[in-house]
Length: 68
Image (cartoon, rainbow, N blue to C red):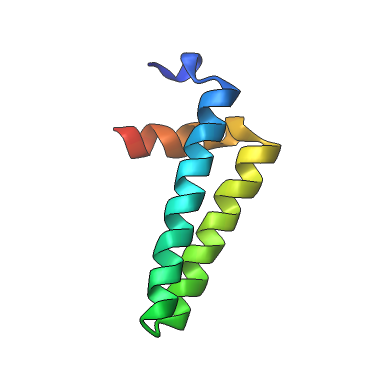
């Protein structure tokens, strides 16, 4: 799938997966007493959730790099 074929629906799904994964890693970091890592991972998750809902097209370069 090339960059032109990235639909908003596909990018939203990518954002949801990344947000959930970040939340899981943030929760694990918090569980292990790593507050800074937990905050960073939570912030990354919030970023993906917000951008995925409001402007999924902005995730094209991130998704492209991730899937490279």
